[in-house]
Image (cartoon, rainbow, N blue to C red; front, side, top):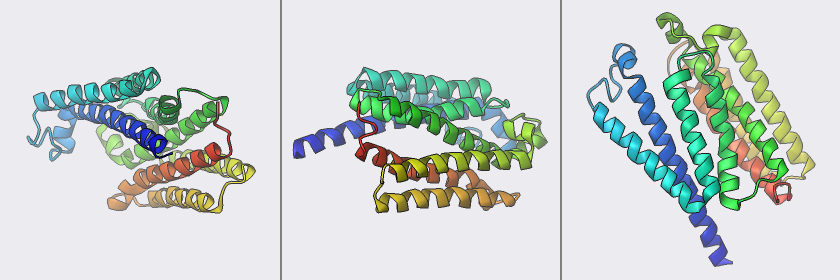
Length: 257
């Protein structure tokens, strides 16, 4: 039993470091792509502020992506495939769609890939129920994309940068964000009750839902730290809710191929 637990922990760590490397690479490319614009709007960021050179950022992007994909490959072909797709999705966001109203698409798709990466990578199977989890994760990702765009709404509008929030407007962005959040939470909660989820897990899911609504409530503030927490709290809430929900589905045997 201890050997099995150790092997599972090793797989989880390699998958985690693989995704971390991919995210570092995407982040570095994002800062490179935004270096000129950040020099005007956010001159204290690492590249425009002179703390990190463009050459160093390229090195970080290449080495992090190589490390991330190598760690994913060490788990198996499934993890490597999803890792490559995730990296490509992030680069499409960074280099093509970030400053367009379609930026939410790769954002939502990237969130949807996370359960597929973790489950298929670790287990090597894709049970039909997992596709439902992926679909719900995409909805959660779309909600987070709206929250993220909302945080930058005024800055994007003043600088003429198009986004889904500037296209929809503040009120409709918040309402659509709330509708998606409700859908995700209701589906997760209903399936948890149907699967007779344990009370502690229901409490964890409730905490995740509460964080999501706390973040959304902060959207009433126009500027400042509270405004920046809109999407960050929602993101933490989605992670907490999603992790507890996956444990419920797994313990109920729903995700067994």
